[in-house]
Amino acid sequence: MGFWDFPFMLKAFRFRRLVVRDGRRRKKKKPSWLTPVSHGYYTIDRLSHIDRSSSADSVFVQREQQNEELEIWLFAVSNAGTGKEIVKYIQNHLFDKLPNEHGIMRKCKETMRRAYVEEKRSGGSAASVTVVNGEKLAMASIGGHRVVVCRDGEAHQIKDNNRKSSTRNWSNFIFPVCYQREMEDESDPRNQELALVTEKIDSDIEFIIIGSSGIWEVIKNEEAINLIRHIEDPQEAAKCLAKEALNRISKSEISCIVIRFD
Image (cartoon, rainbow, N blue to C red; front, side, top):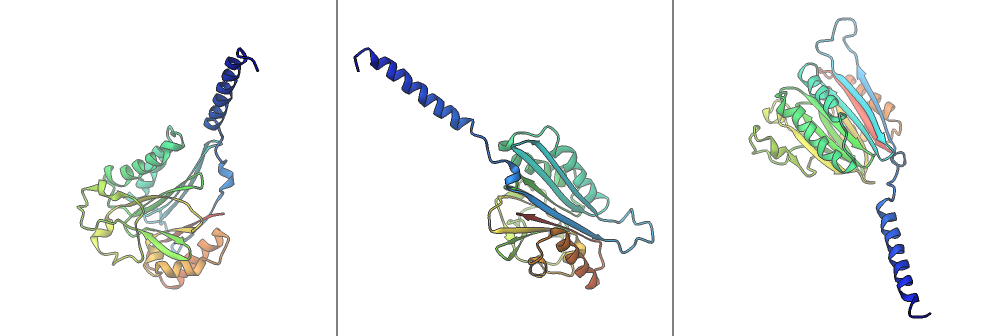
């Protein structure tokens, strides 16, 4: 190789390095269908013979796919009136002008916070879960409705980690993952505080239960997990859980959603 060949070799090396770096930058992310989300829901209509429109629970399931790299699921159970308005706010604002994947979790948290708090709907009872690409979660609840996660066979309920905080200082309720094994007395006014958490979905998370107060007033978290853990079909699992609450003579509305990550 002569002296005059060196500049050409240097240019070739620089070009190759640019191609490699550009290739890394443009590498496609894993398609969302590689991490599928399955769900089932069930409600007990105990008052079907009368007009129950003013008191019935509402179950919401909505899926939006912006492109191959962004899929969003919204699951929610709410009571009538204020609780239903909470979920409507989330629906109307979460899917409006969706950001890219890097900004979606921030929007999920902010939309939930505004829906539950800034819109002055804190008197309602609702629980919601947002799933992004089957890899990330944003979960929120207020009132008697509850989100319970089955992690490696154990039940974990999302709950705020700062019970001494004022209910007006809502920024304290956006925090890293915090779980509580069982819920205190639902008559406790502190249960009207908002619990809002985010986390990544890993192999330890088996499924999630979103349930109305009619589920949790007669079934404990661990009981619910043990009852349906062996049921692979989330629709059958939701049905089993709702009917068990009915058999235990729950006096409130009974609705639930079961979400699995396959």
